[in-house]
Length: 121
Image (cartoon, rainbow, N blue to C red; front, side, top):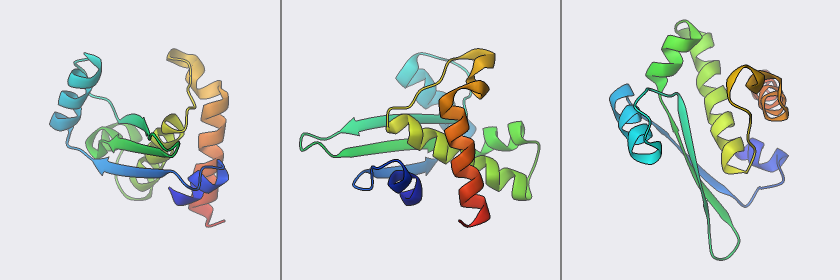
């Protein structure tokens, strides 16, 4: 995610990405947001007193596998997409809920970064 942070002008930020099982992701979703369902990514920005930004991104490979339709390159790309998505949330980006989420600025930015990261540029 260092590249994404650099592209966003936040090279000094620190992001951790943690992979969770579906059961642990459901528990985190319930504890953090009061929601009972499984989600694929949860992100928490943790601004520091000195002005730096630290963030935690939690990704559920089980949810990614189910929603990406399988294994291999498709799953790897979806896991990357979720890590980028969470990183953008930590950096303050947001998107609408519902069908409009894939037409918003954050989604376009996310997809641009995923393409750049998967193409090696």
